[in-house]
Length: 411
Image 1 (tube, rainbow, N blue to C red):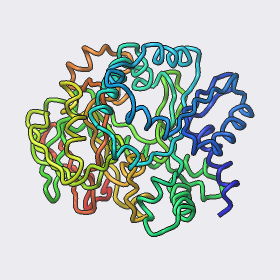
Image 2 (image 1 turned 180 degrees about the horizontal axis):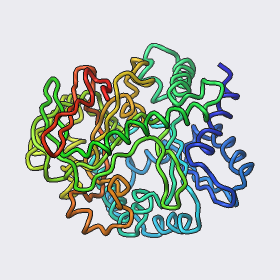
Image 3 (image 1 turned 90 degrees about the vertical axis):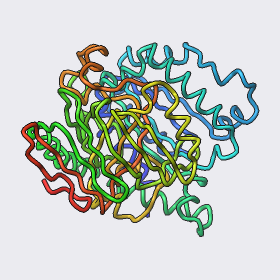
């Protein structure tokens, strides 16, 4: 593997296909220290494409950890408004947002997770009240999330390898998952995008009323929001410019009705939530809300997430992903939601996406809520699909439309 060559291709993919940066736009980059090598190439590529400016905001895991371990108790209930307004100023000035980070799922293992939950809650509230969240959820700002390895993350997957070997192996899996290992990753993404759009278009034409999930521990009926829109692959910003919010992505997703979900559900993969692995999750839904929950590991962490606000126990997204996909075919659990959610169908509790509703980006919040779209401070994905999970759609006249059989598309 030629690492430098692949870093150049990866940076080009994130900027040119992910963000789809246009001449004269700005680029705001949020990166971790492990992402600096690929970020350097991304900055270069952005200027080559005609960026008016590139701003890079770097965070360091150990510095972030110090806040949680040694900070005074009251600082976890404070998130200065100027931090959100600072970002909003960039969005208003036509900057697009590229996020490249390494996530160590063990970083916060010794941290009081009530601190993490409290800070997340207040930050989410400020982001919502200042309108920053709306820029992203509506598609007014184009944004892309990519990932790079770090030792802590790599060692949770390749436990018997040395630090250096584990990072190299994880790089290889990332490059494979995002198609950087191919001669022309951007062309490969356009072809992949066309396939996702075919699935999206089929589901929108079907005009489904509800979806039924069946598998071990799972028997769940999910009604869809009124005027829901299936979205998959690239999406158009409000300015009509396509972009990929996540790289990789294998999903086609839409908006469930936040008050019409009933039955039982078993998660099929662990979730890395705020630095803790939550595994063995089981749910009971009634009238859209999670009324019972248990987990073999990390139960208290997920409970804190569900208690962030009154709607954090309701669904904001359902996504269909077939089992036979590049990420799933690695046979790995990545312990990273960006990858694991694209190896498996998944749900998200909390906030819905306005652009996954017909005319959603122009509609008022009141109208979206009336149609069943959830509003919350959080958006937390977890995996529900597997080779033994079937998904069936139902039209308004009761016609059954098989969607996933044995985990794979049948449409």
